[in-house]
Image (cartoon, rainbow, N blue to C red; front, side, top):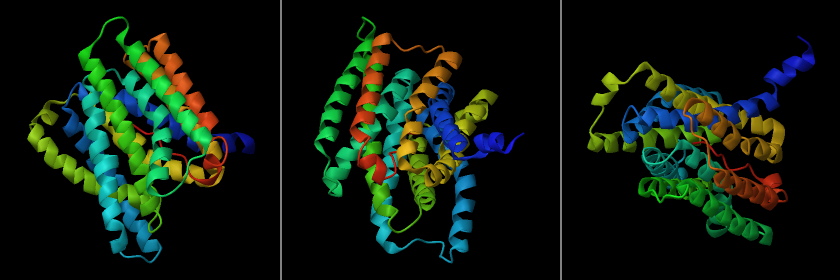
Length: 314
């Protein structure tokens, strides 16, 4: 194998492609998982397993930097907000939505619209005034979302699917807010530390909520395929996915990273079509394409070159 071939397989481009693949696969695996085990239990298991990787990395990283295990007091309020949004709010809405609507709807509505919500909240909360092109892009994205929702009906109004798609949109909005909290928290700690702490705090809240849902008895009877899918979500999407993301973005820069994030829906749709037989309606694909085009157009200057792109994981 030549040096060029090794670089393509192990370099930053390969890292970002792996991230896009695992984040896309997370939608497919999440849909399959909630068909075997209740949604809040599945969300809890996601963070319990991810913590097995993230917590040791967190402790090792802070020790290497000569920092204590606990972060500075200044971050706890925004950290709690991050945990309650990125972990609790997002996962509750996302996994419950998957019990009502196809994963393809989540793929078409969450990663495509998330950058728009992030920029809107950034303008409201941390005074990042969006240029006019961002506002125009947001309007076009809303039109695209409407097409995705309309295509989901396929001629018949389905209440469950409409509710599920609505939950996906709200989940994406909440996740956009959480990205702004991440920017605040990472003024004091590393992104990996923020991911770990929010996952542990939010995972504890999810664990209590799962008890109210009926507890964990169904895990004992979960098939082997469930554990494969939850491993994909916990390790591929959540733990290693973010480790690779932060490593890759430091090498390729936020502008190119934004391009790779736009591949997430493509990988997700392909995998859901293969393994779940979920094929989006042409109108949905047109709507999602309109959203992606609006995001690319709206962020190709300024914002994408200055700041890390909004992560679009499931």
